[in-house]
Length: 49
Image (cartoon, rainbow, N blue to C red; front, side, top):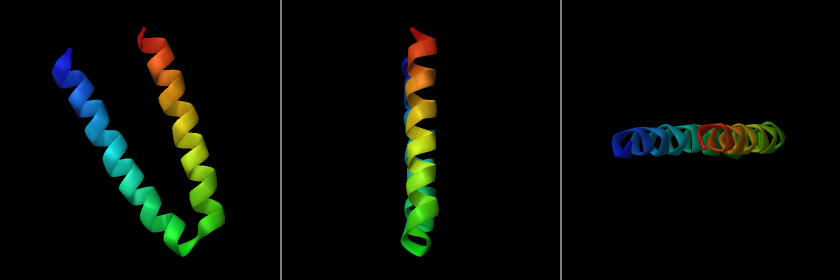
């Protein structure tokens, strides 16, 4: 269970870094991607419980 959580956190961190680089070049796209990722992360967390 702990390793699954760590893997998820690593994936979210890498995704966040990728989005951050995109957002630096294209703020509008970056913002929409951050919103979409946040919603997906929340849904994933809710479904896991």
